[in-house]
Amino acid sequence: MKIKPYFPMLSLLFGAFVWGTIWYPYRLMDKVGVSGIYSSFYIFTLTLTIALTYFFITKKKISIDSKNFWLLSLIAGYTNISYVLAVIHGEVVRVMLLFYLSPIWTIFLAHFLLNEENSKRHYVAASISLIGAFVMLWQPDHFILLNSRSDWLALTSGMGFALTNVMTRKHQHMTINQKALAIWMGVIIVALICIAMDKSPMPSLAFFTWADKFMMMMIALCLFFSTLFVQYGVTQIKAVEASSFFLFEIVVAAISAYLLANEIIYFREWIGGFMIITGVILAAQN
Image (cartoon, rainbow, N blue to C red; front, side, top):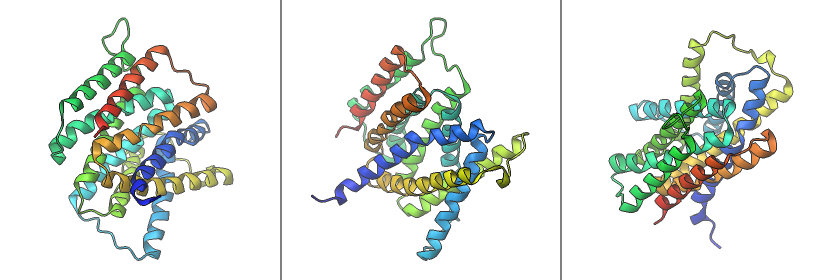
């Protein structure tokens, strides 16, 4: 069996697995007083250090002087920071479902930015997913209720994720390493902007135990590989089709949230989530 044709799909599934479980160590750090902003800063600084070491050893030269690089960097940075904050403070599966409206935004972004043709099926799929979101968010006294900051962070993070993936596919002149570097640097930049506006003291390196440092290094390694793999997969597969593989993240998150946080999915969220997933799968069909 040839492995190479399946590598882009496996790359996306690996990325989905990492982001479907990474919420837990971030929550552990938040419980001991390290917010998602500070933990993201430290972890992605480690990730960037690993990347620069890898680029130095392999003698890879990467240009960072284009506006496309920095635009991708800022959008990806916001996407990552908002996602981390959402899964720390919100219900994991609810956050995931709101985040995974991203394929719906991808349908429209891919049409206007990539000239990818949309069929009636794509618009039907978008409608099903959006109705699913309304079902999940509906409350008796509200037409639609985004009842916490984590809901808004999840929703806007999904929009940022869709735009990041579309830009990744659009800028074919940028290498995979260049796109990955933009993401890592973007998280650090956005984290620094948030830190500058935050009045709470920044935890020093002395605050962390050796176990904490080891955990952050393991997360950084996972993020290093998952970012490279996802950038490769998104570059090889159509933006809308790639979105369906990321649904694996919802499965991983649901299992991990149940086992690690004892979270329960309510009936309305099951129905809404099922519709969202159905819409995404329908949109990704050839």
